[in-house]
Image 1 (cartoon, one colour):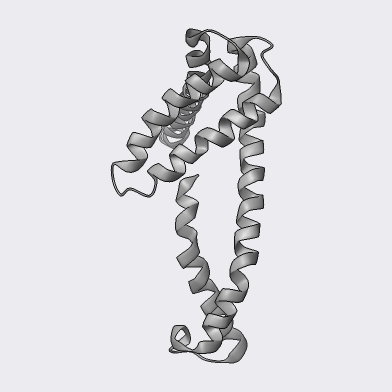
Image 2 (cartoon, rainbow, N blue to C red):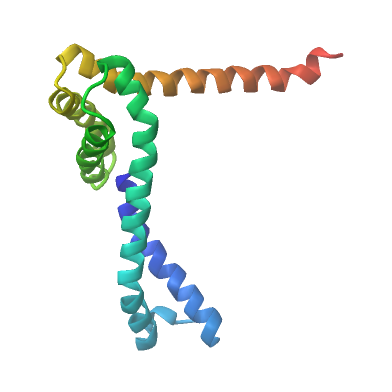
Length: 163
């Protein structure tokens, strides 16, 4: 999720390309004062769209994650608590993505750890059940990837086996 923070330079480049297409300038767009005026004017819109997309993405992920939390924890405190846990702990991933190379890897470990603590507190459950609730999406993701890899390897070999 945090890698979206790096989308701003790409967005400014895209705004430059749009400006070049609209006003016919093909070189030196970034040096023109009108481009920077357009970029600064578009910034609040880009940030607002980014915030809405981030909230929608968090909501969709919480929709997927909440049934797994209910499976591991039981009834718990409801969808709102799961959504808040996901929203608060996503900051760890965002900050970790700012550090090159090792940041995202470290963020995953801290994110899983703090997600477990947050699930335990939000749903008033044991640490073991909370960690299981955090591990279930990862397990589901790994099994799904394994199924796709196996399907892809057998589907690719099917024309060879028909001979």
